[in-house]
Amino acid sequence: MKGFFITGTDTDVGKTRIAAGLLHVLAARGHTTAAMKPVSAGCHDAAHGLHHDIMRNLRNDDALILQRHATLALPYEQVNPYAYAAAIAPHIAATQSGYAIDVTHIKKLFDDMAQRVDAVIVEGAGGWLVPINDHETMANVAQALGLPVILVVRMRLGCLNHALLSVESIAHHGLPLAGWVANILNPDFTPLQDNIDALRARINAPLLGVVPHLENVDAESVARYLNL
Ligand SMILES: Nc1ncnc2c1ncn2[C@@H]1O[C@H](COP(=O)(O)OP(=O)(O)O)[C@@H](O)[C@H]1O
Ligand SMILES: [Mg+2]
Image (cartoon, rainbow, N blue to C red; front, side, top):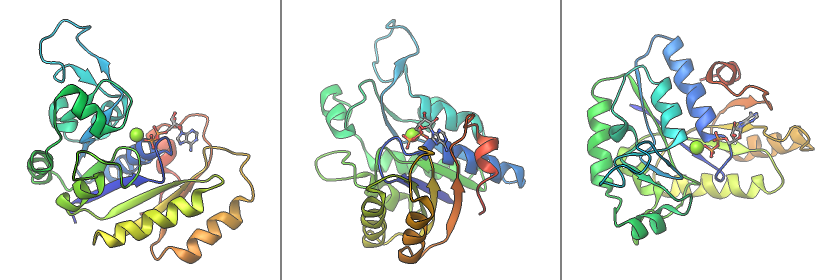
């Protein structure tokens, strides 16, 4: 085991905040960490348009958060090798920009950081089966890295189906599910406990935390609700 692959029931479910929380927990226990967001769509231009290589100057907020919370300082290009400006499906962004996603390249960058730290936290993009090109998905990235998976479930109506489909497909891809996290973005969602119980009864992996709706979703606050 050389870390975790963080996936979620959807986009905007809390993958980045939970990943940052995990990095905080690991560092607090004295482990060295690195972090990676191999593919991001939705970036700002760090060079304000004054550049020739469109990908080189693009920065994604998720990748910057992960980069900041890892103990090992890495160049942005290693944390987030595929950065696309438009917040659209990655394989479409890749086609439009002409920068195709190469899983072998992601694996090479990952192997380099994995040799230098105790654990690498890798955040997917969107949900588990998001396509990255004509023949591969984010699940194939997780497979190539060979990491156990942590599934972040945003507690809302519809999450049982999304969570169970994800769990089934993670198993189908032959990867271990290290656990799942219930993230309560919407404090008004009811009945919360019955929904958590329904997933506990059906997911054969530990519930690693129930993260409440937080006013301040910083890594340290999230970490308080995670038990690895
Ligand atoms: N437990 C929480 N309480 C309050 N806000 C949250 C919580 N978890 C996530 N958020 C907010 O929800 C949004 C999506 O979270 P993020 O971690 O970026 O999701 P993802 O990485 O899955 O797209 C962010 O604005 C984040 O601050
Ligand atoms: Mg994210």
